[in-house]
Image (cartoon, rainbow over all chains, first blue to last red; front, side):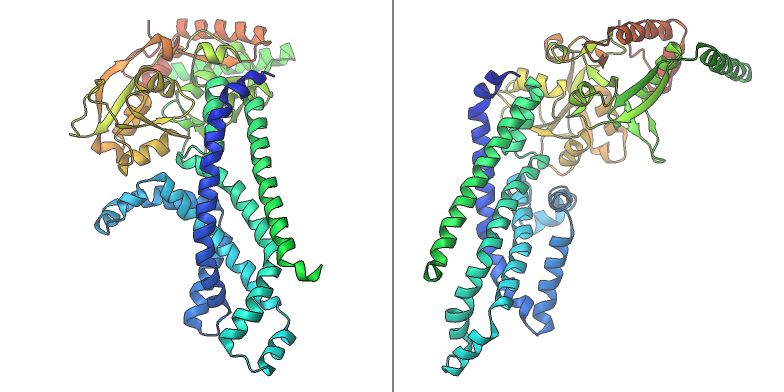
Length: 227
Length: 258
């Protein structure tokens, strides 16, 4: 074991970790924006609303993220003329865009399911009581359902964030130099497989614990009235 | 031709008898990648083939060894050898100083230069100026990547792919301006239906500093007996014409080099 290799390459690894964090945050934020309406559509009784939401969730939860990445990145390459006509090729040309798109759509589907479950789990009694008080539908959603659903969804959502962060390691297959991509490159030069992967694993572990810690703190705050 | 077949049949029979008599013919697990045509590939029927594999089989015959073939992803092929998933790597691996720190190499069994390729008619010259800020696709962990980063790393943007096929795909979709790879492998792509719009450009680079001493078979450092056997077998197939026969199937020149 040669740990000087790790020390020499730590700045590069940290650079990779920065891209990992960047992609994670970006995908999470856009994914969340997608997830909330999809969760509501999924609960709707109108087939024009729930069917597309159902199809989207089914596809993105039912296929491996790696395949989604390949489809979006190499698949878009096959439709270059069409995408150029639409003026979208400039975006799809970039591995960064394709990576974030795949991760966003993937986490959007999972998060939508988490929220749907949480909304369904809000006790019917709470809603009835609100109705009895004369609240309208929107007011009930805003004051009763949403706060309760967020509290219920929070721990599961924290899980999803951790999963997504780790799933970003897959973007290295479409040439992005995230933490895993950089580690692979260093290893191809130094052959220090164990040293570099151990350090890489430790960095992922550190990021995961930072996320878990943050979510715990927020969870405590969300439930402070129950303590 | 028929006579030749008969010879081979007799030879095989003889081999199997000698195998019985010896009682312990050596067992070797040959490792290769299976995704680097025409050198090693998995054909439409799912069978392993290609120049490396045929040479490997000829070597096994010459060593009277009982060989089993194992495939591994390129990135993990040296670690897999060290972890004893197989005993040799015969996968068009260039002999380099860096790799010699990890594994031992036989003498070369062929040599190969690297070349650039561009979309047909694209005015890109292979000079320091002509290459400025061009995006070059290359398979990662190959000598082509080392050469590119070492020789042109400051000038071009390097885009490294897990497999050559992926780099080729991105060439076709226009995400890279140039490809750099083993000239045989690139030639294969250029001759394929998809590669018609791509052409070679610039000289064939044989820089020993990056490209090493040709292509060898890697074994674990402690397996020196196997290494000697392989070296003797390479000599043997060069001398008895087996090499020339396999060579002729794939290339119209002697790929062994001088």
